[in-house]
Length: 409
Image (cartoon, rainbow, N blue to C red; front, side):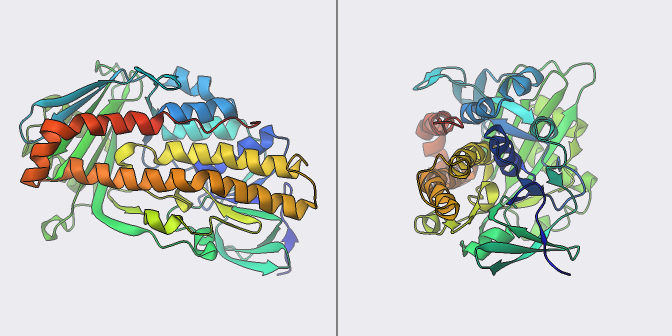
């Protein structure tokens, strides 16, 4: 099949997740068209929800959809951390307290509503579904994209937002994501008449697992459960019933309150019943080629991390705003003199410079927080419950008190 020019301009974005849609919308706001390739036949809502911190809302405000998301979701007012070993509250934190950039903000945002909000702002035809990139080749400065359906696209700029198993990240030579030794299950409980829970983020730590629950709105409660699999856990992800029972057995064997158990009982599981938690070795990003010529990556394709900070989706939105700003200014001639090719490459290098150390810090902090919170080691448990819980809660707020800027600064 002869290659054909990419539709909607010459910028191709692989993946219609948060990073991909945020980048496309940011470019659209800058007056630049792009084509988003999504391997699935529709927007994917697996995972159910994101813990969405202040940094994410700064990015959403920059993209023009922040208030729409706020209206659909409750603001979490407090964090309560409970020891799964003793049932005691080991830390409470005000999630609205003022940080360096003003009051903090955190909401549990349904994935489907967030993706829809971004998609609705894009020009019709921006997303091409059932389009998976299987290889990247070069023809001079043009990237030739081979798709799974046999078609071929030519791109002047290629942005990989294609997840943990990113084809684009592999082409750039980024280190393969590592397995953390932990897995996660997620669920969403729906209460048509209202759940009656306070807008608080409850976390249960210790006893060999980490779990939490948080209302999205007045009818939906999102929960998660992470643990270290053993030989005895084989087959728990064969069905929703087995996975749910496994989670309930773990929770019932600890000091988790009955109301948390009731949420799991009522819930439906994600279509991915249990997922291994992977992360890109943070030091590998210190010298990695986040951009190479006219190719770069964002979101999980750049910085897959464990979910212990709730920053995976938030940082993907940050990526989208920064990338759209740097690339958009290069393409509309604001990135200095020289030919367009040089401006594009300079714009992507600036994006990589801005995002490199933020990504390193998030990955390393998330891994460390997860290890401490989930550990069943007696010494770690003692230090965590007596001294470290406040530090860990502070890190959650600190990582969320970050400003990626707007589309114009």
